[in-house]
Image (cartoon, rainbow, N blue to C red; front, side, top):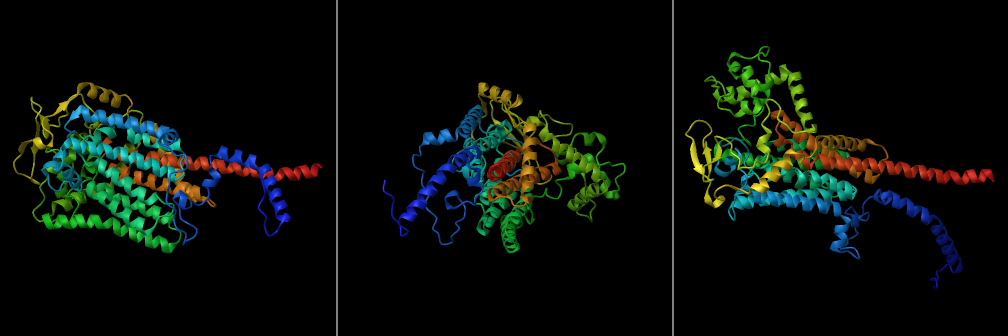
Length: 569
């Protein structure tokens, strides 16, 4: 083939031939190194527009994304076969749950969202999607949408991990927890806000992590989404802390850090303040819920040493006896026989302030008891088996049963399968109203016995994220987060570290704040969408670091070999 002539003439041709022969001589070794490292060297460079990164030329137009040459659905599935297999398994389990229980599963707190029972007890952000779906369907449609949310969270996390540089097999394993965990499936089938809370967390984190460098616009959008989570479950208020840590760690200068942290903080506060303002206009109370100031009573009362606790005389009735303490935080918070429910404040004092002061005195005077109990509850997530410890909320509430579940005296069915609720439509006092589930919401309860038996066996005999695996994810996520402090880290290494930092700190914040109120296996579910992905990022960071060290050693050996040869000659 004729070589193109240049202004340099034959000299250029000779130089080109020499360069080509040199490239051919070195190409085999370089290709082998790239193959063994799975493209690590290329990934260590800043991502360009084609990889979802930022263009080095500000005026460079972003090219339109097109499928690569030779792309086909079959080839795509072959490339992502493990994730596709897990997704199909997750879909199959969700279809089985959908057909095994009709209508959707109902819990004690479901009456808050369906009929407004116990007004002000919790934020009602879940009401918006729930009532919107019920306008066009029944509770079975609500359940189907929540199952789709579970699948969508898995797909989003998988795509996010790939964009951050995690290997396909590792990213697929990270989403296996949310796809296959039976407790996650049970909650998706229940009329409760937890799945929407998880979805808002995943969406907010995806906005922050989708591009290599977070922008002010992304901070605003993520702040609003994460702020909305607090209107669904009040523990979402804790999400601003890990988001700020992430923004400050990846801002790239103090000016950018101030701008981005201010943007995400203000955006986070907007939906919370809007909700509180609406609550004030409707009820005269500027709050997310009336339980906000009292939510830790059950936890503090259950572990308090009342014999040594110094209290004003009017607070002493709040201290439970040993038998009441043994019943646990959930009983102390909600039972009609709890000291909290029977406490009458002095006429000149505010009841809410008294309860808050009691909680504060326990925390300040007996911090080691508080820390010890919460630390013990944190480790339960890593246990091999899932059981109910003394004083905990029974795990049976979050398990599949072979019959339609009852939660007396609030939710039960009669002999015909009619679902009946016992409603309290006032904050305190007032009669109990018994109401049948509206026919438009799904009618009588039904179960498909083969499906319920399989689901129960699956759940009881290992169909959940193993505790040791969650511990490994926590350790890997923490280790990956700490690599952000490494000097001379590559761009790709820093992307993995920042992702691990955000996901790990988010999971830790939500779980720790939840355990501050009480331990419940239901409250551990957000860990499924944060801790395994954080662990995958941490493992990917460790693998990349090991490959870079190996490449450096090989390069050093290659540079030293000619010197040794020259000396020998």
